[in-house]
Image (cartoon, rainbow, N blue to C red; front, side, top):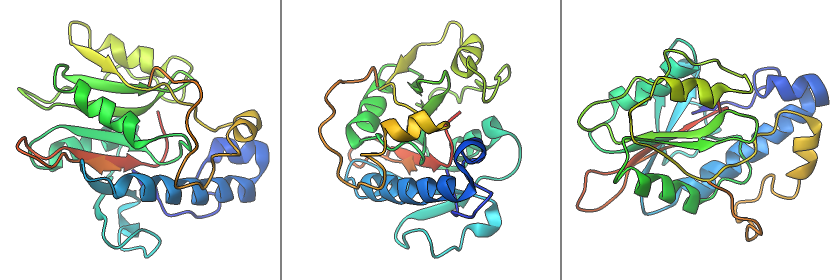
Length: 223
């Protein structure tokens, strides 16, 4: 899921601390590098879920990457939309504003869907940067009790998934405050990332092969 980089419309929490211009520069560089890094992988097919829908034709995004509109509603409704619209097969929806996301993090999530119904990529701030579903035998509806942009967002979602087989991929850091920005400055805008020194506990994608193609959606901000 992604937005066209426009001042005042992206990374609004970060903008309150570093200014609209600083937030815009961060999002423009990070979203472009994440899309470039992940959309060229041979393991899945990438779709960009664009908000608002009217910006789908924007020339900001790579022409070769498929697009769909995020539609209306809260973040949960918009993340469920590709799960409902795309052809059968596992789907992972990710944020495009996480500088450290790597192909191996997404591959790990898809592998987890071979044994689990749903997978999350936890964020250090208590939310999540990735959600994936197998969609078989049914699509789960995990957001009924979600508290968005809260320190316990992921925990509130997991409440609705009691009894389900839930997996996790790498734990990564969001960038919402100046300290986050400083810590990840060396990664911002880089298409090829340096080796991750400390392994974490861990944008629509589709696997190419004998199984139904895995599909991944990229979203503009993690939960």
